[in-house]
Structure formats: C-alpha cells, structure tokens
Length: 226
Image (cartoon, rainbow, N blue to C red; front, side):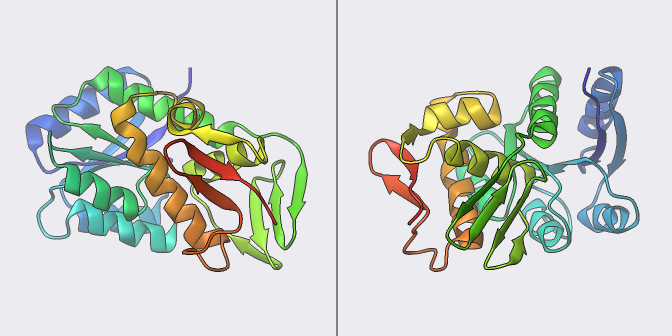
C-alpha cells in the first residue's frame, strides 16, 4: 500500500483533526498546521512528499502559499476548495497546484487522489527522447531544453510523458484525466488545461505560439514536435 509523508494545511481545527485522523488510519504520516507561514517554514526545514492545502487560510492564503512553494520546490500540491468556488480552483491550478478536492472532504476521495499522485511520482519508462533542443529522459525523469534542465512537477511530467508517448495523436481531455489523474470527471477538464498551460510556459520558446503541444479545438491536445 502506498503511503506518504503529508503536510496538511487547514485552519479549521475540526476539519484538520478529522483529516489528520483519517489519513493516519490509511497509513500516511501527517504533519498539520493552521497557517501558510508555518507550512512554508516546515517545507524549508523538512520536505514532505505531498502538501494538502486549504485555499482559505488566515494571513497568506492557499493560492499564495502554492505560488511560494513553486518558487522553491516542485512537490505535489492538492488544494482543498469550497463547493462552487470555481475561481479559486482556476487560480490555484494556474499557481501550480496538481489537483483539488472540494469540501466537505471525503477522506477516501482525498486518499485516492494522494495515492494517484504517488503512482505518478513513481512511474517511469526507460528511454531518452530528443525533439530538436527538447530532451525528455523518461528513465531519469528529467526534461531539458537547449541544455538547461526544466523543473516540472510530478503531474506536469506525467502529462508531458503521456503526450510524448503518442506523438502526432490527438488525446482528448477525458483520456488524459484517466491517464494522468486517475479519474475522468468531465468537469475536471480544467486540470488538464491548466497543466498544459504550465508545461507550455516551461518548455515552449514562445508559450503563446506553441511548437510542441498543440491545441486541437473541440478535441484535446497533440504533441507534434517540429
């Protein structure tokens, strides 16, 4: 059974205690804090495997915490969002979050998302692929362009690897949700779109004019290297 060292950031004491208990019963090791400032201090001193991050926090909110995490680390981040807060979800995904779970949180759903992320981190295929100045090393799980390493989150890397595995083919969002996030709820297609945008910002010479990952309107995405 896959277990993780989890950093839980939730300011509601009852929710925090309930999630910590439920995740601990699933075998995970959980460290919890009520504020983003405390969480960032913890990450600098002791890196967790996954961060479970409430969007609405006192002081530094969850989206800003996610942005600051991305400046120093590519570890997976799952957002806890309120029902119907679509704007928070979109902004959080653009800030670099890998996934989200809507409150009230079902512990089994959160546990499933955590284990899906662990599988993404662990999965690798041995091979080194070269597309012009873009190099995707599936064995070492590294990506570089023009000789400079590009730092991708596990989810970004898994999505890129899935696209690279099917060069020239159009992959629809539902397929990518199943392959990368291990679920295929149509409403979660924004996970795919936000992740593609983040990858483009990192690998494309001009993100607004992509040469690697192309959008096929009404269908999905295609990896077509020049």
